[in-house]
Length: 129
Image 1 (cartoon, rainbow, N blue to C red):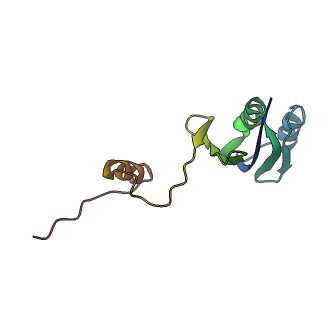
Image 2 (tube, one colour):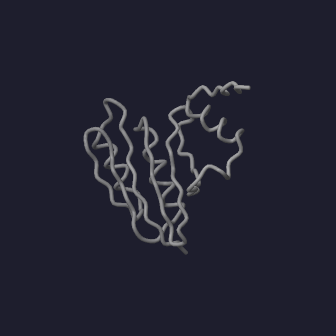
């Protein structure tokens, strides 16, 4: 059973990757992905029923060959998520998305945590009495 979703992404190859080896590895997978390999990486997309196991097999097959990557999905129920490749962990991490049109729903602590995660230094402005 599947779920209607569309997704697309890219992955950047490590220097010196054997492109023919990557092509052979992807060709032997039995998945409903369209992909295009270039010298620097691979672009891929799927636009039909989403099967988590097939998506995982495709993304996992790329792990030994890549330095970065991302796949962005949108489902039939307007659900949004992505897979982001973690070079440190050598795995794809699934992240759920939320669309928010204002910042009022976040606490100061949540905003500070997010900015810290993105590498910013947060400093509170002194109050003028």
